Structure formats: C-alpha cells, structure tokens
Length: 246
Image 1 (tube, rainbow, N blue to C red):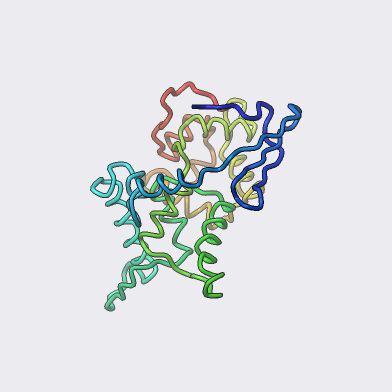
Image 2 (cartoon, rainbow, N blue to C red; image 1 turned 90 degrees about the horizontal axis):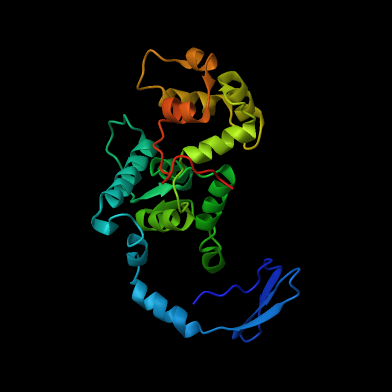
C-alpha cells in the first residue's frame, strides 16, 4: 500500500530513544507523523535476499552468469595490469585487489560516470569502512567490494541524449556550441578539468578516426545530438528520444 505522508515534503526526521518509532515533520502542511517501526520485516527482507554477495549479484543484468558480471571481472583484472604496467615483462604479482585510485576508471568502463564529488564519496566509504574497528584506513578494494560499491552508487538509468541536451542548455547552446567555447568552460567551470585530462579524453574519443584530430574539433559547431554521436559515441538509453528532463 502506498501512502503520501507529507505532500509538501519532509522538513525533519528523528527516531525515538528505543528505536521503535519514527517521527517525521512536514512543512507548510503543519503535520507531524508518528510511525511504528517493525524491524522484523527488515530481517525477513535480509534473509530472502541471500547471503554475502548474492543480493548484489541479483541486481546485475544477467546475474552472476551474465555477460555484465564477466565484464566487471575483466575490467577489475585489467585495472591490476594498469597498476603494474601494461607492458611489464617481469612476473606479475596477483593481489586480487586494486588501489582506490583505480575505482573511477573501472566505474567509467562499466558505463557509470561519477562526478569528482561522487568519487570522493566512494573513496571515503571504502577507505574508512573499518576505521572504527581497526583505526586503520583501507587503500585497496577487492572484486566483491567493488561490485557492492558499483551496485550502491550507480545511477538507476544510464546517461542518454536527453541528459547531454540538458547539459548543453546549461552551457547556453543556442542551438549549437563551438568546441572552443565548450573547451574553455570545461577548463574553468564547475569540476574543472585540467588540460592534460581533456587532451587524454580527446585522444581516447577520436582514436578510432585517425584523420580527425583536436584541430578539427576546435573548428566544429556541436549540437547536443551531434556531440553525443560524433564525439562521445553514446547510445541513446532513453526510452523516448524526445523526452526532456524536468
């Protein structure tokens, strides 16, 4: 059964001293609600969800036997190769863990593009996950922990052309945006990129077409659709291409 508790939003929330009741306060509706907490229902949900990694694997497309799980495993071990050097000839040390700074790379490879703030949140979550018990920070993560982190932080929907269009609207594209203008804003606004980071991204994005370099991009006017197609190479994950964000 669904219930609208506070039509105008919740201004505050608290739990009683014995943990049996939840108090919620509205805003303009001038309503305070008292909710009885049945923790046994949470225990039942936990039991039916499975043990260890099972609940998380069930949330992946295809589960443990699916192609996506195999992709996660592949990217995890490729991250180990990156750390030890892709062209190294010495015997490699298999640790079954990757350093925290590789987490963003793996997430992006899986189609999740976290902001710098979201990256900091993920790092902190792992780094201090056992600090209260051991007073030690954690500087690496194993495959199971990575899967849990991905499932808990990934967006519900992938990025599609509607999101790219919204970003172009924020940049003030009318209706197109020159690459030099976009580049200047990427280097100076919001979570600013460095020139090296931007150049590295361009090298990766245009590598498939050896005839297209940065100079060509600099002279090109982009709409949201052409930028998504020609530069990012994104598929449209939206159910309806004409959907707008609100």
